[in-house]
Image (cartoon, rainbow, N blue to C red; front, top):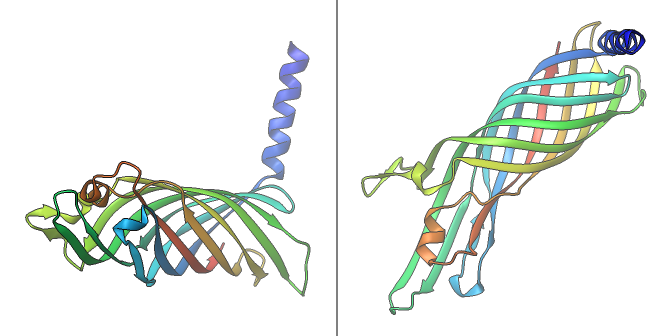
Length: 219
């Protein structure tokens, strides 16, 4: 038992000694859109993608020379302009065009794989993982309140997405690095309450999609 305890302590110490944490700041201009899981009869369409912004703190925890767990805390805006036009069972016609803007606090959890140097002081990285997101605000057609009801109540509080991306990282000094990359975020969960009730279709769902350009500096 004593040997096992000593071995465990030795391994923990070794991993701690090998581990290295790099913390930085990231800015992510984002092209955001939506996708639907809906019957064609509702005529839901994405009218356009919108330019949004993400910003926050990132952290890479290296457990080996070229491998790191990556996480952080980011504020990101999502959403796009959508339209719909359909007839209800009572014969009434429902139509509209909404510009959706959602704000989330994101907690990404991913694995980063780094290459060896491909140019002086420069490596490539590949990233795959997911993100747990909490809604902190919402607007529809640039309005916070619609018919005396907060726009944020139209949408679910939590969202999960999968992310995959890659980029390049350059060492500027002993403790400073800059990076740039491209990341695709694909929403996994339904973000909608309002449109599901509007169609009275329990199978309807609205999900976020986005592609971001990631720029940052790590210390």
